Structure formats: C-alpha cells, structure tokens
Image (cartoon, rainbow, N blue to C red; front, side):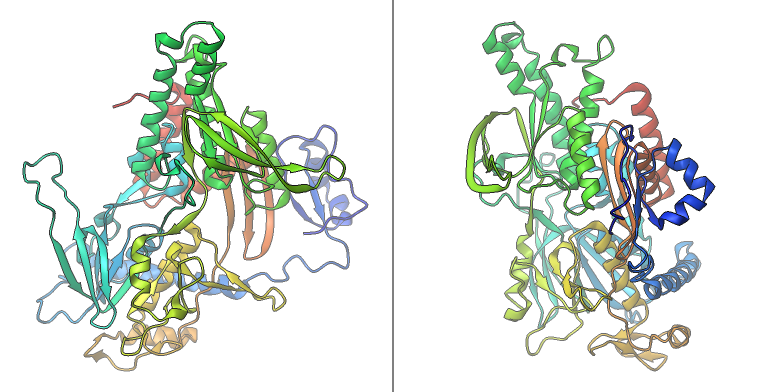
Length: 594
C-alpha cells in the first residue's frame, strides 16, 4: 500500500490508536465525517495516488462467494444431523450394514477440529486419535498462562465437538502402512500414578479408508544448549506449567536470603524474576504483553501480592530478526515495538540466544556506526535469568518423518514437512491409493496460489487460520463424496456404491454450483491480531491480499477481543471467557499455585 508523497502521515499529537483509510485525498476532504475524525481522533491516513491500482483489485470476490455457498451447505449438514443427535435416527445402524467410509483423524488441533465440526457423520465414520482429548483456542494460551482466562474456558472436548463421532481414542500414532491402509496407535497410560499396574499401555492397529494427518508441529530449539529445559507455549499443559513456574519465580524472589538491600541480594532477587522470551512473533509479543499485565497486578502497592518486587521484575524479549511480528504490515511492527518498550519490556532485536542457563548467552548483530547498517560482527553478552520461554521456530513432529518414509522422495519438503497438492494429498508410492491420505496444518507444505500472476506461488503460512480452513475443505470433500482417486476429484454418479454412500441431492447441489469437479483449496486471509498488554493490540483486517484497515492501540484491543470472543467454538466458551475477562479486570489475575 503506497502513500501520497505530498501528505503528512503523522502529527505531533498523534495518539497510539491508528486507523488506516484507503482512498484519495479529495475523498477525505469532501467527506465531512472523515474530516472531523481526522482532526479529533488523530486518524492516520494512507492515500493512494490517482494512478495507483484500484482498492479492490485482487479482491477475492469469487472465493468469498464460494465460501458463502459453503456456509449454506454446512448449515444444511448441521440441520441434517439434528435427528441423529437427538436419537430419532440411529446413524450407526447394524455393523454389517454400515457402508460409511472410515475416516481416521490424527490430532485435535485447528484442522482436525474444523473437520470434526463440519463432517457429515451420516456419510463417513469418524475416528479421532489424539493424545489430547480436547481442542484448545491456542491464541489465548498466553492469557491462560498468567490467569487472565482459565484453561477450561477456551477448550472443547473432542467428543463434544461432534456428538456423532464414531470413536475417540486417546493415544498417539506411531506407524502407518499406506499400502494396507492401517495405522498403529500407542494408547495413553490413563492410570499413571493412580493404579499400581505399571504395565505399558497396549498398541493397537486400525484400518482406514481415509487418513487425515493433522498432528501439528513442535517447538524447534535448533539444538541450542539448554533450550530443551525451557518452557513452551503450544498446549494447555504448557500454559499450566508456565503459570505455575511464574508463581514459583515470585516466591523464590521473596525468600529471606534475598530480602536484604545489599548489592548481591538485589542482583540475585532481580535475576529470579527476570523472564526471557525467545522469539518476537505473535506468541512472543502476546506473552510479553500478558506478563506485563500480570506484573502490574501483583506488584501494586497495598493491593498486589508482591509489591516489594516492583523494581526487580524484568521482561526481556530476544528476537533474531530486525523487526517484531514480520507477518504484520511495517507500521504495525513499529507500533508493536513502541508499545512493548513503553510497558517496560526490554526488546533485543537481531539477537540470537546461543545458550540457556541461569546466565543466558545472547549474540547481537552490531550496527555500523557510520552507515547504521547491520554488520556481520556480533556482540556477545550474558543475561541472568530466572525463567526462559521458547517461542521461536517450529519443526515437524516425529510421526511426520515416519510417514515420509512410506512416501516417495518428492513428498519431502526441505524443512521436513509433507508436500501436498491443491487437494491436500501427498504424492503416493506405486501401489498405494491416491486420495487415501491427507496432510493438513503445520505438517503440510501447501502452495498458496495467488490470483496475481506476477506474485508467483509461495507456501501457505503455518497458522491456525490456514489449518482451520484446510480442515473444513477436507470435510466438504468427504461430505460431497467426490472420487478422490482422480485429479481433480469429481462427483461419483449413482445413488449407492460399494465404496460408500452417494447422496443424489448433494449431486444436484454440486451441479447447481458447478462443482462436478472439486475446486482446489483456496486460502482466504482475513487478517491477523495480536495483544500487546495494557489494553492495546494490533489488528490488521484484510480480505485475501487486500488490506482494509489497521489499528494499533485501544481500538485495536476492542477489535481483538471482539474477534476472539466470536471465534470461540461454542456459546459456553464465549460466556466463560467473558466472565474470566470481567473477573480479572475487577479482582486482578490469580497466580495461586494449586
């Protein structure tokens, strides 16, 4: 998005809240409302030159229309499920007469959860395998780790996601045979620490017609010494451990051995409540913002639980790149840096953590004093820390490598993920059925096909938004009973086949929409959000590649909260999260260790 060179973009009294208006200067001056907003609300304007591309050039109108029809189709599927959910119709029927295809889903994250929600269980038999028995709204893990919201408020049990799920198995997939279409599962030891029986849980083998691999990713510490001992923020267990650890750090810094006023005691007390966050992506900055909110609560005079530690607490954010949250537009990256620094966060850019210990080793690129450009020279320093949270980088989980050994070499992407086609199918070896295996979410290397021919193709980002849309896409492919062995998949003709159920009404619906052939996956980017602490947030709203508006500050915070509330998976979660926000605003955040 370009700026008019003749327009001043900021004022001396510009507030933190910023609004991006896309239009012409004449349009702004002719509109009385916008003129008033410009003068009274410190609106930041982004103008286009008259010869610039139109605002809606590249607007994904076709994809929006397609998603609208998809939503109508999803509603009809949910209506169709009502008699089954209420027990009026037995969807399971007799085992010998059940001709539904068995779809095994590995995982319970964004992709798997979206598939479970949308899949028509009158046509497919869903079996979910995951070591975690719930879905978690991961963007709020940072809030859960400091007590802003409770864990159960942002989770939904797998079995509650779709009451018609055939079976849920709490375990982890350890092997797969793509020729025989079988999956090996190591069951979880559910009675660990309770039962005297110490035998390892059994391993089972299951058959499938379609296997959906949505196993997510793991944090990559790149072999940094000591990084394997750091805390992470990928699951509710991680958030629970971090919440406990933060409370322990405050108690540790409140012990009598560091309560004095000597230089050594002051230094050691500060070390015990120095928190190092590695990674300046959305997770890193949201955690930094949540921690500053927590510390503001617990160190308040008279009302806080640790007022004596007010001058000792430090939050240090180390990021290897030159700017925070590179996924956002440049103006919002600058706002993120300013907002965090204003809240007391020490942000170290161009800095790598080379060793994690009580004295973490940091390596920072040095700028040329004359040109201001970064050089290859690095400055080494030590940072005494009490707690380190690693929020940088991801890597495939071990099962992805196990699966890749069964697939041809062209299925392996350079970072260890699985390369997939536009229908989320990986290349299959000779003798294995195409369309029997799908890979979604962080485990998949899927190309993003831009409508602009000059942009070329790039990989889709590993985000919750992408994974959720991929899960819904596969659910619809299965609901429509496409013949997935063909490229592109196409509608099967006939009311009933040996392979499964074909719905004549669905066939007519697809003909009406012109979808006799399955369209490739298209990602509809709706923007990004990130919390900065202190009632401020980044909000970048877009449709496809078209940026509509960007806010930074309190208005962005309102938009952030509104979207996160609406995106909760159930009404129960929306109510619980709302009460959690009200509770933390009135009574502060609770760091009681239970």
